Image (tube, rainbow, N blue to C red):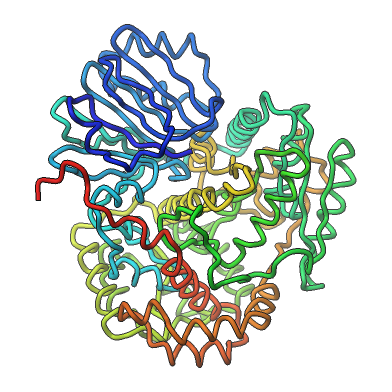
Length: 609
C-alpha cells in the first residue's frame, strides 16, 4: 500500500507530476477533485460517504459501515471524529473530507504513519516520505543520517527526524488538517491514559483488545501465518489466531545457540496447536544474518531510510516466501509485546515515586540480581533531571565511554554514543541536533516509564513500517497486533506497581491470556538471545563487509572513517552490547547503496523556482 493525500483545491493534482504511480487508484473528494492517489488492494480500503463528507479507512481495520456513516453524518467538523477513530480495532490510516477541509492520521505506533511537505504553497501528505521527497527533488540530509549511527539507537525526538529535508512526520497522537486554502495545521487528538487500572480490569481490557485486533486480521482469510519463536508474545498471537477458525501456519527458526531455549518452548506450543501447520527451519536454512549486504536492495525496494531490521532482513524475506508458499498473505509477529509488558529498569524509578516502600524493596532485590553498585543505584533512583536536561547531557557525552553493565539504567532514555569510527564532523552534527531538541523539549509522558514505553512503541512501529516495503516481493503483509492503538492504550493504563512481579514474567499479559493460552506455556520466565546469529553473520560475511570499506558511502558523506570501521570489522568485541554500533553503521551504508537513496531527485511540477 502507498498513497498521497491532496487538499481539496483546484490544481492540487498538478503538483504530483509523475510522482503518482502508473495505474494508480484514486479516491476523490466529494467535490470531484482527487484526494487519495496511490496503490492499494481493494480489501485494504473502505470508503464511506454521508452527504458532502467522505471517510476512508486504509489498512487492517474492522468497521461497521452503517455506524461509520452515522458518525460521519453527525460530525460537525473533522475534530468530531476523535471518538470514532478511538473505537476501531486494528492498524490503519483514517482520512476524512469535510466540505473543503481534510483530516488524515495514522496509528499511534507509526506502523501506519503520515508524512507531509509543502509544494508551491500547498501541503501534500503521504504514508511514506519518499514520494514527498521526489516532489521536492532533494537528496538525503547527512546530519540526520549521522544520528542514525548512534548506538544503541537515536533517542526520541531525533528518532522521528526524516532523512529527507523538507519532509516532516506527524507527532504522536496527532492528525494533519488540510484547509480549503491548501495549508495545513496539526491537531493533537490523543493523549496517553494515566496508569490507573488494577490487575483484573487491566487483564480483561488487554485480552479484549488483543482478541479484537487479531480477529480483525484473520476475518475473511483462508490462511494466516505467524511467528512461533517460543516467546510469550508470538505464542499468544498463535493461539488467538488459531481460535478464529482461520487456517494457521506457524514459522520457527531454530536458534544457533544451544543455550537458547526458544526451540523447546516452540515445540511445546506447536504440540498444543494440532490444527495448525508448522514450519520449522534449521539455522543454516536460508540466508545468515547480515547476508547479503552489497546490492541487497533492488529497484523494487522503496525504503524511507536505513532499515532498523537490516541485520536479518534477508531471513525475514525468506520467511515471507516460505509462508507465501503455504498460502499466507498476512503474517503476524509478536513485535511490541516486550515493549508493552516487560518493564525496563526505569520501572523502579517510577515505582519509588508511586509506592515508596514497595519501590525501595523492589529496587534492593533488582540491585542484588543485576549486581548494581549501591551508590549508583541510590543516585539513579533519586535522579530528578528533566527530559530537556537529559538531552543536553546526552550531547555532552556522545563520545564518552559507555556505561558499564553494572550501572542501573533508569533515565528518560538510554545512553546513546557515537561509534568510535565516526568523524568529528558527524559527532558535531548529532551534538547540535540534540542541543536544538533540548530547547523546550517535553517528554512523551511526564512519567519516565510511560515515556520509555511510548518511545519503544514508536521505534518498533517505525521498524515494522519500514520493513513492509521490503516484503512486497513475497506479497506478504507483516502485522503486529501488539502495536495496535487499542492494545497500546490498554497496556499504558495498567498501574505501574502491577507491571512486574517476583514470581511471574510479564504478569499483565500472563493474566490476560489465561483463558486462551495453555497454562504450561504461560510459565516461561526466560528469553532467547541471538548474538550467536550476529557473530556468525559477521564472520561469514567478513569479506563482503571489508569490501564495503574500500568505497564507503558514509565516508563520502564525511560521516565515517573507513579505516577505523575496517579495523572494527576485523576484530569485533566479545560483548554483545558492542555489536549495535556495527549493525547500525552497516544499515546506513546498505541504504546509501540502494536505489532508494538516489531516487528522489526530480524537480517538482509547479515549483515556482
